[in-house]
Image (cartoon, rainbow, N blue to C red; front, side):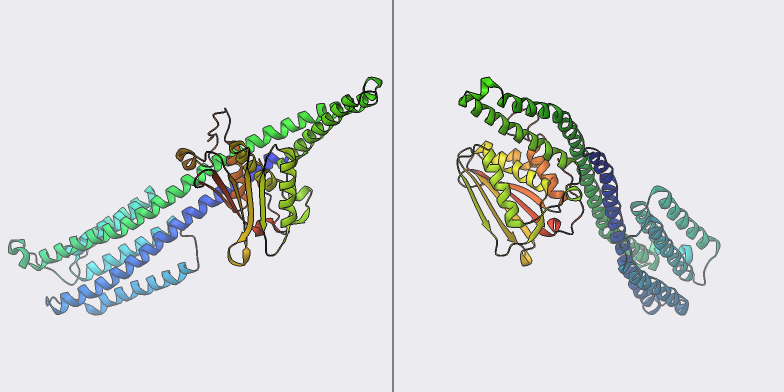
Length: 453
């Protein structure tokens, strides 16, 4: 019954990872929408400045009322967009496409009223097309291309009320050439500024998705090991039970009753057998929902004291310096995954430093909301490569095949509790591994089980 919970854990991981991927994509979409809103404000201010300059300085008669109305409608749309998206976290491709189509329509209207195809700012269509190609999927990008082409054709087919005469032979003195240079400068600056920002947003999204894919691979790796461990634990249950019965029978046989030395050996065998059964029970418990099956209320201090006492009683440690600094004890749920994680970290420290291991625990953060455990040793410390690959599977300095899984499992259990695990070298010798967990993840009302190794 216990091992059947492990496949459920495997299926529960995929929706969580997919949800995180969706959140990452939605976050990138919102940031892109905010960039478009910011760019639209700049475009509105630029339109107003250009209208005033062309009408007042260059003396070109423009339909001011209609052009200002278009700019005003665009400003109202942008203000509404800003208010609408402020309370939301998801901006999809259709929303971005609609925003770009509104910009294309507004640009077409302004160009129609100010010279049509003879207006040098007609090349601003290229900026809209570029934004569509960067922000949108292929099909939506082509929609923006089609909208831009339709706008240009409309300017050709329907000349507006204003005509701008171009005389390129005059060089910089020609108003058309001046507008063309200004359009080029404006397009280049906006493209470099905003498309550069959008590219960074997309790179951040891709990096986040890569991290999530790596996390999914690691979680699946843990699930496979959990299936193997729980299956082996079930298989070991029967032979261990048989050995327990045989030892009980031997204890009552005449050859053993008259020999105190043999009785002592039987006692030691029974003790070690009981330890094996406890380990198997712990594996089975870790393969399932520990809190849902056997929730045990305890205090933080009692839990840590029990873990340290059980660990030191079953390991050949010469000296364990254990210090618990708690101004106020709290009630928590005794979690087998956390217990095994602490055991793994202590085991690694003991292998590196058989003569001395240190363990300190205290509460940190505002109002002591987090628990910090620091395990120290006096060994050779981590190599630079081991620190760079800390937490990756099979990252071991011991040279054993399959080594390095202890810290890998510990890191993933810490992550499942919303905590973190990091390592560093001590001066002048030794290493330390620090675990930080939010105490809310161990509270009595925290029902979500942590994936167990």
